[in-house]
Image (cartoon, rainbow, N blue to C red; front, side, top):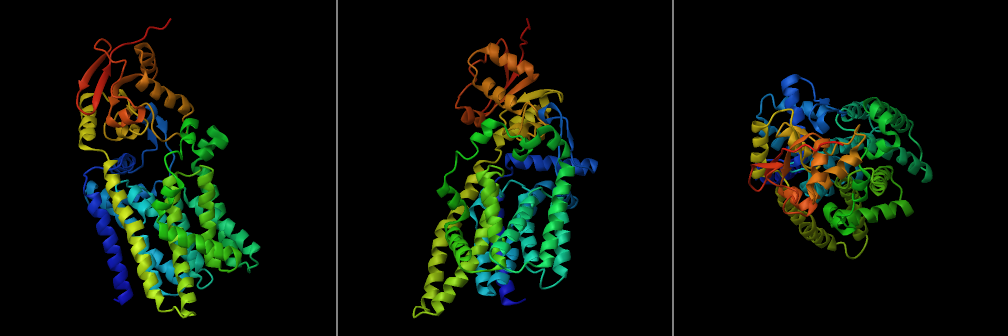
Length: 496
């Protein structure tokens, strides 16, 4: 094994080990992760994903590309489920260091810079915040998207990369609809090539047009019914208006930079400025195009904030490698060439303080947002002591837990596609939890045929309450008492 490859493998092991250390601190997962677990278990038991969900919103159809769930189900054939969900997604996202090394090496033609960049990619704070225990498809989507960028950059060198690119487009399309980001970036790349007066490659043009048509056609086939029901609102995934207005209120620009990493962000901005105003590079324009697309989607609120930051962070890390190459080359031409070692040491120190330390902090924070033992026990009680046809009221965030862990019907969850009364349900859930008068609460509980109310610490924090004000012994029975309380609804409101 070559020395560089050995160092790269050590970086991979270091990244994976740190992630697994935090992941195994808790036997549980993030709330979103349990939706993935439910799909994988359904595939194991029935051979097919859960496209018709009898529990979410009391019954609805689901639309999604299923390949990621099949991949996890395959590993679940010979590994226990808990190990698959802890280990495999972390291996996927840790493999990004290999792909970053390939792209950085191709751009800079400098293996030392490529190794340094690969090391940086292993400690992107937002990844530790969103992918430690989420079992998210993005743990595979982001490395594969980076690999597609690498293949596209090399299509002119060897035709085999054309076939690799086409094959991987098919695969990624079956994993997640975010492949559309790459298609939009490639179209913007065509515009950059035109504006900068560079020669347009015929192979690149054909690949871009083919992949764009394939992606748009396949997404329309998958989500056709949702497009017909929601129209243009499908672009925002039918997210309720109240949620859209609050989408970015909990984060500042400085916090976004903190999640990406200060070093990649600043160096990335330098490269964008330099290559838009003076220098020319096809590879850099491709990366800039991707960054612009994600930034525009974030501004238009067409992509979740942390998802956009994960994609942006990969691009900025790659732009960092080019910035480091340019700066070191400039120093070589001056009397300060010996300062390059000092510069690398300084960058490493700043990176330690602004990326590695935040990554560890976010990893610890993510553990606090996973399901805890008290919630798990309460949900298991619901599963064992209630009828399967019962509907359980919870917060919107906990809707997935009601369907996945308690195996009961919820009133609502975060998947709003084909839900025509999503805004109404969101308002009604808030009204029930914050109701002062029993009449209004019972009316809405009857409206959704709610048999049980799940009242947790998450609900207390979300609605800023300590108890449910309308509860009394006549209409509600406390059937589970702990940090999580579960009430059975007994009263019916007479109409007329």
